[in-house]
Length: 186
Image (cartoon, rainbow, N blue to C red; front, top):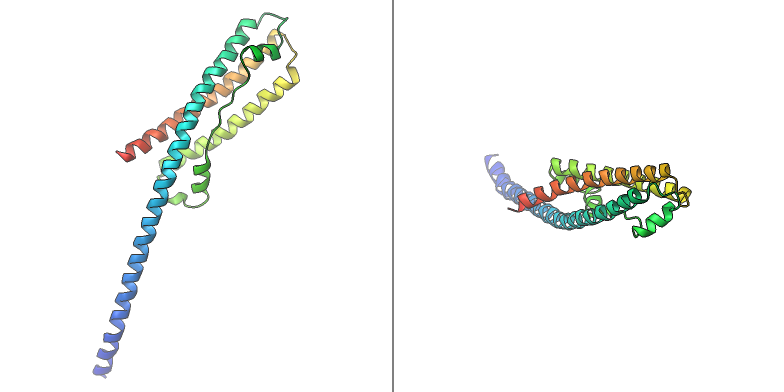
């Protein structure tokens, strides 16, 4: 009986060791793939967020020009909203790029740092809020583009400042993530 047990163990132990080594190698390889995926997503996300932050900064300046134009022509009841918009060279809303966030949030979100995930979720919510506010502004403009009344100009300034407030908050959150990402690289 002892010989049978010894023979059995001689055959089984290498098999068990082989299985354990294969599992270890497989886990190591999966971890390596996950780290590589997170690194690629982080690089892509950093690029998107940097571009978005720059676009927000640029659009904020353009929106401030529109607010300044509205202030300048506020009391002039001969200049309607559409002419003020033309003088300010249009309405500008930044492009908020979140493609990398969408990719990781639908697949391997558990691999990311919780604080970063939380900030990215906030940015996504602010992006949606910005979209709603922008639509409200455009609806207002379409309904009132020929209006020259002071109260219409004042209301339009309020809508634009609300958009600018959301954009500023968005840019601040984006900068936090960019700093976290740069801190992780160093």
